[in-house]
Structures are given as C-alpha cells and as structure tokens.
Length: 205
Image (cartoon, rainbow, N blue to C red):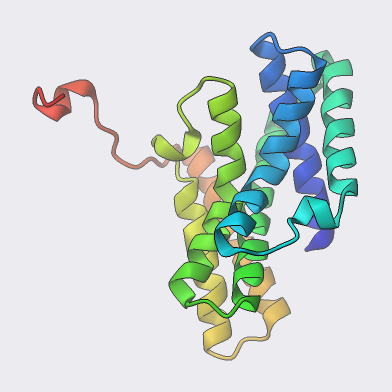
C-alpha cells in the first residue's frame, strides 16, 4: 500500500502541475498545486480528526517528492500530455489507496464506522477539491463523476470485510481492486450521477 501511495502522490503532483501550466502558473504555482493535490486530502483528514503531527510533517520527504514530480512534469510537458490515460489510471488507483489509508488512520483513533469511511473519502477527494479551487474550477467531486462515491464505496467495502472477519491485508487488496475497477468502469462507460441545470431550480435563486 505504501508503494501505491508513493506512486499515487507522484502521479497526482505531475498531472495537476500540467493542469496548472494550462492556467499560466509559474514554477512556484505548479509546485504548490502538485503538493496540495497529492497531500491535501490527508492534511484535511488529520486536522479534522486531530491526528498530529500531520503526515507530511512526519514524513517531509513527501513534500520533496511532490515538488520534484511537479517540476519534472513542467520540464517534460509535451511528452507527458500524451500519457493522459496513464494518469487517469494511476489517479483511480490513488483515489482508492488514499481512501483505504484514510480509513486506517481513522480506525486507529477508535472513531465510529461512519466516521472511518468518511475520513477515507476525505483523504481521497479533498486534495483534488483544493486543486480545483486553486485552478478556479468547479471541484470534480461536486460534479457528475463517480469520484467521491467510489471512495465511499471502497471504504465501506474495506470496513465490511474486516467486520466479517477478513484479514486486513486481504480486505485492503479486495477493496483496492474493487474500487479501482469501479472508478475505471465509471470513466470508461461515462457513468454519472444526475446533475441539475439552472432550469431545474424552478427559478429559485
């Protein structure tokens, strides 16, 4: 799981740095967006749960890794643009891995099961929300995509498997594969939640 986590924060930092380039950001902005995306979800989770020190403070090498990844992405922008499908795949894997890691952190603090699942989802999606806000976009989690739903489903499956006696590593693997498959299927087949256009509000402002 730790290896997957490292791969995920690298991919997140690189892909979001490319997004920052399209917004005309400078090198500092690219590094900031990359680091915030990769580490923001865990930071929000830790602050809400009172889990200190924060992950990137305990492991400052995570900041170095994400900044380096964002810098490399900026230097290799043209060839990396052709690897969009790879970034989507790693992003899906990272989303579920972040969710499971977040569940573990919350479970160690002996909070209730719903809070454990919610902490996992926060870990998975809040980094992307902060990124979208920095890039002046509607956060992906608030749009139609099955994104937060996937994180919630993976966390719920992970806890449910452990509740019925499945060993933790096995539960992690099953939840990771299941959530990863669900996210890729949602991207492939364009599964969406219902969205509401302005006309649907019935004139309410």
